[in-house]
Image (tube, rainbow, N blue to C red):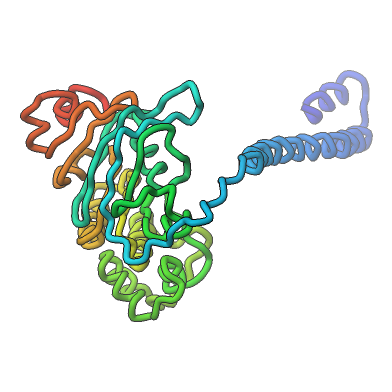
Length: 319
């Protein structure tokens, strides 16, 4: 724009080339601080948004302390019973209503339903991230409110959709599942998770350094390491929360092999968007608006031709 206007002025008013050059330099020096301020304002607004989220976490009330006589529960088996469980994040807004279920070691219990149906809330209550409003949850016959939180959560391994790795070797990242594990136990856990093969193909194997949150690994490889970490923990209860929803079908099959080994002799709760991943569950529970409206095996629910049938055949969207 400056050159164009200057060219017109040179023709019409006798502006010299030297004067045009000086004017262009002054214009550039004037605009630089304005551009810098604009860039800084963008950074400031981004920082304010991040600070708001941090303060939201800091403002959360602390967890209530454990009971003085809370138990440690050594050698937990994993018999889980939820009886008439009702819960709401807000007092007057119920999220789960009268949930009843029983799960035992070696059993796979799947939850399906649209977003907001309460699937993840069930597993949050099992971990005592929140306390139920009514009913009871017991593990091996003991109410979870009578178990120390740290002890309870140590016995529940979770594999989530989002993987969380840290800068360090693959060996160190898997060992995070149980810090006192030996190298041999880490390798055995990787084999259980079907991760040993790809690790061995890396130039430095288990000594390969993971960059950031796993930027030098594929999403499937990161998830396999997450599964290996869960296998190493030896927790009797396993929660798989949409663990394969962010990978392609081929990678999903590889991850499923690792999870099948991981689920042996464990009480497993599965939350999935892809109904193909829960067909082999011992029992599938269909949630809608916080209630279990159907339960049964894959075949039983298809014969019922209810909500699960509609979701599986595509007659209804699974959001």
